[in-house]
Length: 260
View 1 (cartoon, rainbow, N blue to C red):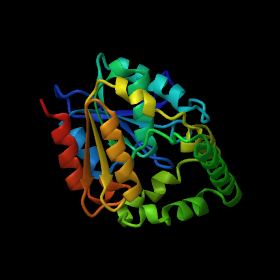
View 2 (cartoon, rainbow, N blue to C red):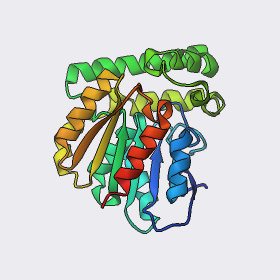
View 3 (cartoon, rainbow, N blue to C red):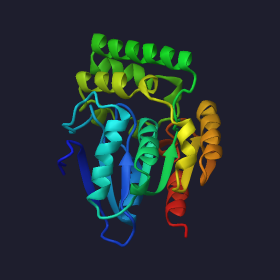
View 4 (cartoon, rainbow, N blue to C red):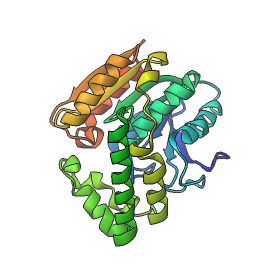
């Protein structure tokens, strides 16, 4: 469905008493890129799968930063009539953290897959901003199809099965939208949230593929910094753990969301 916020929200799932789940995808995906995890959550209850700014069918400004995006998501959550659960992957995990620290009352529980709270070191963050800008420029230079081939050829995604590439879904995005998202909401543009995590009251499950050493370390850091944080690895998986080992991740996510 469309939304007054300008975010495209695909509102679907079973009509049950389960708390609605907000699904926040990764960079260069859209709301359709959740695979079996999305289907399992939709079978459990209502799901609100969002197209991020600059992605899919969202019409809000493509260059919206993470605090601005979190404010729009808080409105989406409020429209459900109560707090929501949130599942965010990679960029979507960073967005979920922004929602948790800026609008804590809107989230009951959260699951973060391959996420970070940003880069605390100023110089390293500035370097990453330059890198994100160069990635955006490369996208503008070679076009969407060639860029996506290069993007998915990264070691980060080496474990993705063919069905989980979501080539058609990714190619429904635009060069302008993805480039604007990289520059405004990439890790280099993100104000680090580490110092604010102590104020998060919701339980948070931090997941990382066991083969993704960088995000295993970040996931452990996140869980330690969050008052009600848990960390778990997904065996034989890399960065996109929910797509590489969907059954295992779905079992972990559903058990966490349904815990007393």
